[in-house]
Length: 393
Image (cartoon, rainbow, N blue to C red):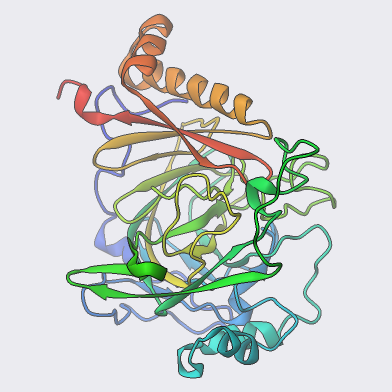
């Protein structure tokens, strides 16, 4: 990859000029976007708002030729609602299903029911289960460029989420690569669903679990993606032109890296004009690995600012925050994912910091933390965290 001068941040150095912040397009119905969008108290101001209404979401894939739900100029800020699939895609009506789990009817967003009622006629072959908002077309983005996605805010929309567990789910699935005949099964009743309430505990937002356990919320989008270039036979591509949303890849997608939260900038290569940005699979909190197969599946609102970077090449998704450069390795095999992550870290250190290959690998072994971000989405993600503080200013 070709990066800015050594020592420089990868983040956009300045916002676009004020003249670039005028709306370039509106919603899909042709209405003009307002000059500024009213925000909840404390949320960043946005130039546009994309609700997760049926016309603004897709189900389980990343179309490459879908009419954009919004067109924006680089530097503009977009607030996007996202919708968890939990409670929105089952056969039973959402109100009956969710109230049966203990969700008060008044806490069920209208777009959950609206999406459920729009399911008929949506293509399903080769698709996965996520409900995904988008795409947003970023003016000036061309194939070969890099889209920078600055995550300004991620907030909960409802005070509840759902986590699933099963005796043969997640890493205990019989189809999991590590499964061996004779492996014991956990004593978990089939179809176990955990309704998890969330709210404030003192000055922090938490998930309230049984036995007095409180887990701090750290909301993030499991899916951050650009429209991919699907290749039949690659992970998640069983139908020509259709990239299912389960496995992540170079285009991003279902990365499930919990560190891609507010305060982080994510970099993805562009495959189609406008980049065509999608967001979804919202999570209230998740542990590295997501070992049951689900996190706290909770509808969220994200606020994003976009920039287009020319003359750069990425061979893996990349991110950064105030503390770390975050480099990802993705592969069907966890060992290969670890190798890919190490390779990408070494490459980054050579190109961004000017180290030799030997120096970079030495530093990677001494100072870089490699974490298993997710192991349940067909392709698996190992993430290298390079601390920024070790480098001279």
